[in-house]
Length: 119
Image (cartoon, rainbow, N blue to C red; front, side, top):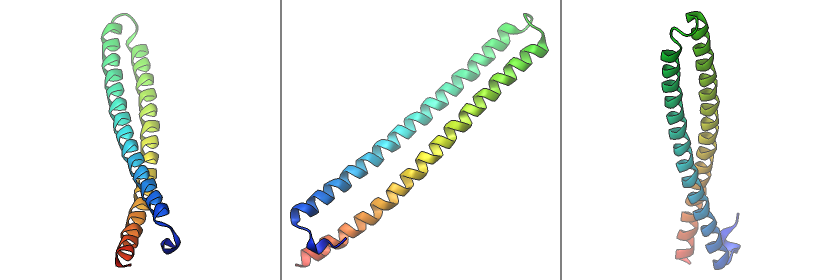
């Protein structure tokens, strides 16, 4: 993009758009952190619930059946965690791409500002 042909108002608009993108990236970082914390808390609660169920079920149902139920629940929890981790990794990658794009934009703005200051 040729910044020399843009008016001052257009340049200010471009700068405001970049600020908006930066705040969007920050918001996504916060959202991802909250999702990770929520996922960790839910996993912890699931493990605690499984332990409680295991204690309750001891003596009420055959040991083999209880172990199968616990193992199935653990497999389901592990699948859920795996899917959540893949989702978080995809979001992390997209945020890294956005961050790289913002770095390029900021670098170009710096160069543009230097040229505008000289003129």
